[in-house]
Image: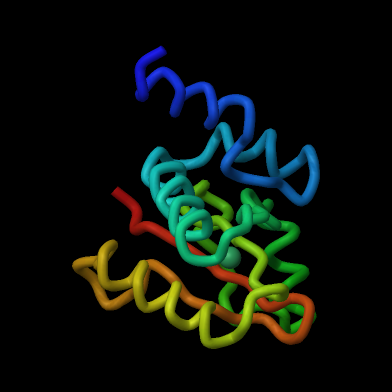
Length: 138
Ligand SMILES: [Zn+2]
């Protein structure tokens, strides 16, 4: 067996990304391809530096859900890139804060945007602490 074949088999039999529930797994198929590429990149980062699988906690969001977050003060924006498949959230609560900050800085360095926004940010209180990654509209 050649090496590439073995690597492919490893990836397929041992998925690189975990999902909080079936909903996130289903929605992941519908996101912007740049978000998929970025998520796989981050899963490589997890594999190399954090030795665990990333858990995707939130993918798509309806306008209704976003409005509810906004009303409850859980989001500062009325419309979110999550509504357009241009954002994904990954759990950080079980990762040391220093490692989380290193990850954010790494992603922002290698996936730099041309506008005023960052590709990655870490936010959320306590158990809700997560990595939010986003790409601009085309
Ligand atoms: Zn998010």
